[in-house]
Picture (cartoon, rainbow, N blue to C red):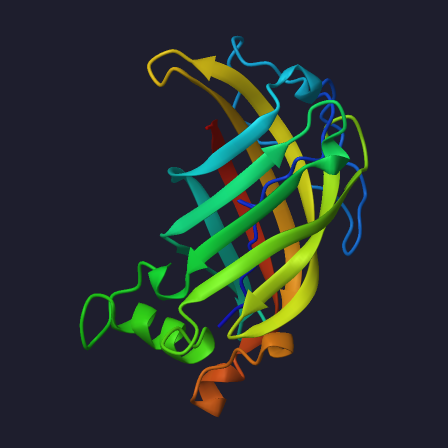
Length: 231
């Protein structure tokens, strides 16, 4: 199956300055930054990136998702996710382009929700051991190299994605979702979303059965949503 990105992401995105508009901004490699979620924002959240505290943030793995989607049989869309994600963000609100991000995903944390004939996680195990090579390469990693602003609420993150031991550059279209101080945590939290497209064949990701692998598109879409907590 597919290619991970990641990301992140978790990606992720320190490339946004303020968030006063929701109009998508075109960005390579495909048209459009992540579509703004239809879920309303809380009035207590600030949607201006430069108002957020600077410094180190840790990815909140319980409130983050990396979802990958491929086309199956040339028609349908098949989606799955990774359950175990960690990451770091060093945020510069004065100049978000100077921010950096790194994300690590456990390759064996694939979750399809598909029951297997040989056990509840048999299909998941088949994907992560074959397509993602989790035994020899247990981690999928993304490390940012540069960030560019594409609008008041959006940016692109260029970085290195390592999957199956192969490292390739990827571009994540990202959006700042807002930030706020969370009283019960006693810390500031920021939210981001991201989206990218990758070629799984660039990383040698394939199922061992050529017939089954042929039903899976080479292109994979990666959707990222993440909260980062100030350290």
